[in-house]
Length: 242
Image 1 (tube, rainbow, N blue to C red):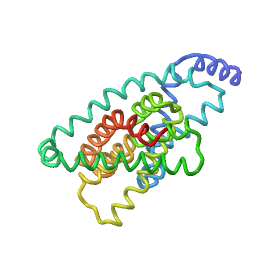
Image 2: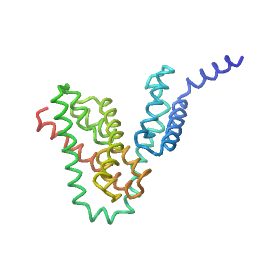
Image 3: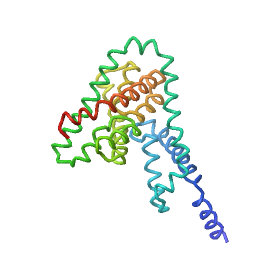
Image 4: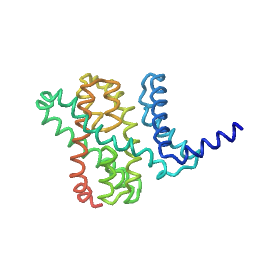
């Protein structure tokens, strides 16, 4: 009787799009808990852990992505408002941003050209196909922009999104180590660096592990890098002959 009741419950839940929403929230809450137990290490970042858990769940129940997204789209919708909300802490530190505007823009441009040229160069040297190279090129911007830019220049949007997440995870691991090596203590510099190199995941890490100032500058770097990359990347791709 209990087995039959569980089967009926699963049939009901599996046909309800809110199952995806529930599973996503539970995966993230569990990931946050695991990350806290591990001392907040970026190696076990909640976003990466959540992705791994959700992939395992989808494979276990044999659910395709389109079905999963019917419920998960409610969280996806909140990505826009959450990104806009990053302007609030940035507004609180607007005077410092204004005083550092020129070096921030120059650092952003240097980061974009360095990320794109080194990535494209290494991919070409290793014999990657053109579509793969063009998917790698926008890896240092937030996923929605990277997917749009990759599609615009001839890359694969889904591959670009995966590479963006991998870049963010690596950036959160390597960034704090570099801060210690070079004895960087300014939270604004730390945040801007993580936002530039590790986009959304770096911004979340900045808010959670460093502070509001770092989070504000990380959000600025993420937005500025995405905006400039959308304009500059197609020109860079043409310059390198792809």
